[in-house]
Length: 470
Image 1 (cartoon, rainbow, N blue to C red):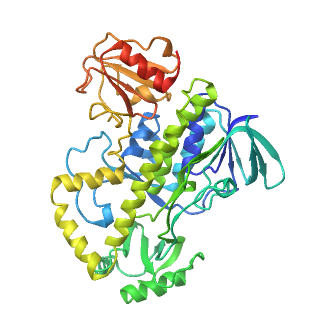
Image 2: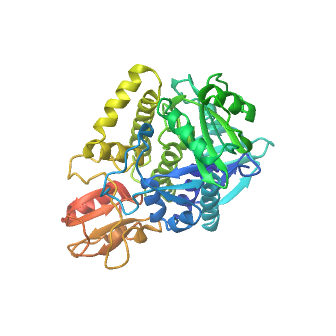
């Protein structure tokens, strides 16, 4: 019997498996695909996701395969630079192929002891008071204490669970792919710049060696996988030329469907990543949102399995992450409107472009896209309560280096407090030189601040709230 079976070994599933293994949870990941993606679709890890990778000692490995880019210009592709002094030691975007992210996270999970089986699709399950019986496509049945659906937008787990997925169906479609072009670079750049002035969806961005990422509106609209001739046809409509595109690496078509699961948990079955929410890729938030779901869920589910979780801890997963997803859906809806070529949305776009010259506006939108503005509702308290804490230089390395093992941390600038009977779940670090304007703070394993103060009794109350009885 497993502690957790995870359906899907995408970024969310692989991240969750690794987080659970940090707490010695017995994990099996079932991935229906037998082979990794055959194309190297580039995605971006935003600031908060980079921070999470740093917390687990994975960032250097990611950077070896990625290309850092400035953190600005993502909201509706409005070309404004990121404001100076963003509250992060990792204030950039890392462009990296999605299959590489999956491979690195899966390797990390396996190194920690997770089992991963490819070519295994979940087709049915039944839960009871003690666990979940999972049936695979070949008829094999497996038993687990919990099942987590990380199996994407068309999630089998979500459908079998009977969880509603309300929202809007796709009304507009877009073609995206990577291919070579036959038009000289200077001529192409001039034409692309001219078209982009009136059509913000359209883009052709070079990756060197004649390879371009092509994004073009799809006037036909279809759920079917595209072929190169679809790109040629739409490029002629939008640009008057197909730019001699050829030798595609990968081709895709996506719609602007926007949906949010009504619930993230039903008994012993939970949802994370695209199984819980879908939205257009505007702003590049989807993969990041899923990884951050898993980071929030992992330690809580592990605590439940290890037997020390407070009664309502696992319920805070939905309470904290579903509103975050709802906000992402809202901002992608807004961005899609701003990408319209209609006169009304274009007028609003011009106005917002002017407003983004104000540092506060630009900073607010960048923080929203990169998820560094999230504040979970932990009740009344100082402004930092419920927020993530940036990486800090300490007497002993950096703050995030002390979070590699997925445990909570008490950062004590007074050198007077203790974690007492919670030392098996919470690490202690005394450093009066730490550059944070509070006496002491308690960090959850996901890096969010659960308590601020200097009173031992008050600390003990909050240790109990988050980490159970000592």
